[in-house]
Image 1: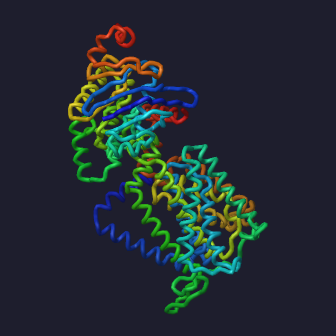
Image 2: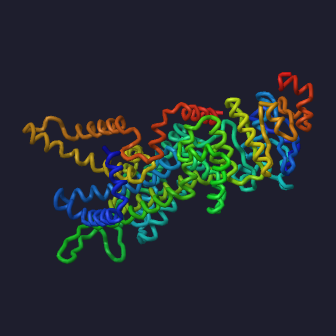
Image 3: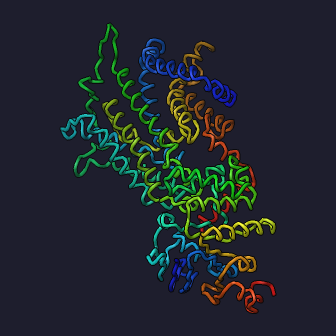
Length: 378
Length: 234
């Protein structure tokens, strides 16, 4: 069905007017989304959408590392943590510092990028499962560090986390307040929505440009065959480090925004489970495909929340609650993931190239792969 | 053009290449023949920057290139076609060729060279949009060579281009290699198929147990009873 829709869309795209109309409708939808959601589903849902946007940024960042360069990173949330803690330390009563956002966010991106290189440098020769194990360890190290950095000097305030973080203030507009404009009341979550949306769009733009760039091609080459890539004159070391750094810096920005939005952070927000969820978003949506990754991020944030209505649904159908919706929620969520992976193994919207990889049952391709695997083991 | 002196390469404790000397002049087609495990591929990989030598000197246009990584060697005009071809099997033929030109940034020249590759290898032109992994072995070898040529190399290092190919295809590939040499590219050819390699080369080196045991003009090697006995089945 999705394939059919895609081909129809390809056909309709021939007409420029269709393209413009689609863009305008899409822009209007995005602009009105918080108001429509707030009026129909309630304001709580706008907050969920805000989180979906944060996760889109995370997923797009990880997509560079996993989707483009093919380096499985299971500790990605560590960069989110670095960005969040940097914001929290520089804009909260913890050290009495109150830096402005425009200074912290770039610094957060830079610091997270540095941590990305820190993780990338010792793991340059690792691939697949082995890389996954090291990155998983890295994610845990960062989290445990954050938990224990309250003694002998109290830096992170340990497991209690850092509270009363400064809200994000842009051009004099405090995003934690409700503003009134032309008789319209715009609550804080709506303001954050627009901020996150603009960051998201910027990151999407960067990703689209990267995909077709020289660097993007080099990442694909490395993913396909590292030895051949280096024979093509690609500096595999630098290009891999660049993937780690770029991916990490997106995570850092997202983390900074998260800290300002939430007002409180603790190590609990940066567990292994969060890393896995972000990987799930990419795999489920379609590795290497920007639209797919965005879709995956939205689905995996919104779907579990929507399942909270299961209780109401049971009451409607059976007149009473039979199974605790909270138990049922995770069960159905897991089941949905399994089903999607069975029926669309390369993701909901796979990138053209990735789909090829999954469809490759051609014996010569398999043979080649085994050969290159053998080379690596040697 | 290329001057190798006293080169040794080891994998851990195993000495694969034991202080060999090698010279290649510009425009030459030189082959390096020998049995399995003689150290031919190791030598080539070291010249291509994939392995670091233990000691010895490698000079290219009178400059030491010893220990330089492969991407820098490619910038200087040394291209390696690895053993087993090493094509990007899940990318299209065209994408493979474009990646071959990764080290260049003259868009016009790249497009021109791409067309030239398609005239040189009509089979690749027919299959430009096809996934490289679905090509036949011989076509893949052609693609690997064409891809290396996309970097406009001065020195082409070919590792066992005949490996795993049908005899007809081997003939074709060797004809192509001769054509490339005639176009002015210097070639170092590593081969197990000694007879064919010597037939198209001007000079040859024979390698045994990590040492170069014999070197001469190719026709002389072909006529050498020792070589005939060991490698030509004579």
